Length: 107
Length: 119
Image (tube, rainbow over all chains, first blue to last red; front, side, top):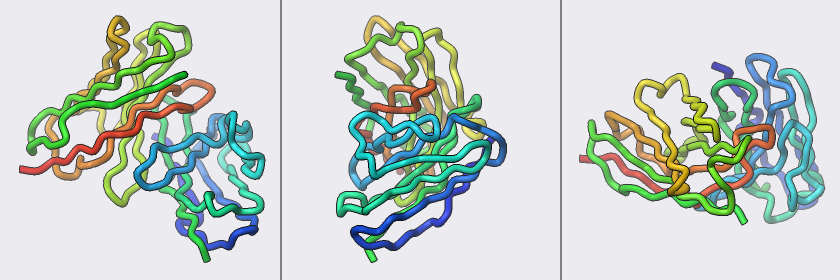
């Protein structure tokens, strides 16, 4: 079973900042890595698939990169609507595990 | 437009079996490449992937829950059903179904349904 580890667990930032969230897999999963945004009471929203592909309709300030076992989600010029919890997910193997989440909060 | 909607009991007793139904529209469960998965989120905790079924009836399960889960589909009814046996209060969570699981990850999700396990 592949373990996904995100860092940091909590990230404090201000509107206009650029932030980066890291996700590490316990074994190679490239390129089958997705990023989701999740807000309380809402369904998770797919942002990035296959490590770096922007889902249709997602603002271009979201970008993903990485390969092998290490991946990053970068959010440029943070907007008020971006404060949420972010999850990475690997879908390379038999089971599709999530990271533990990164809560992006307003500083 | 792809939509998914979860349905099932909101309250189950410990040791009971939970049955959840995901009713889909905007796509066919028999179309090549299509998958529907189940994901849950206990209150205050992270998302947890549970199971996935593909158009060809290929099934995948979380290793830690495999012994308790069964996923099936009824193409004629546009439904995917998840059963979880021996429910425990730790299984209290919002349960989501989602379209995908293939190369494009999970792009469409249902609204989720909260299931509470309590006597």
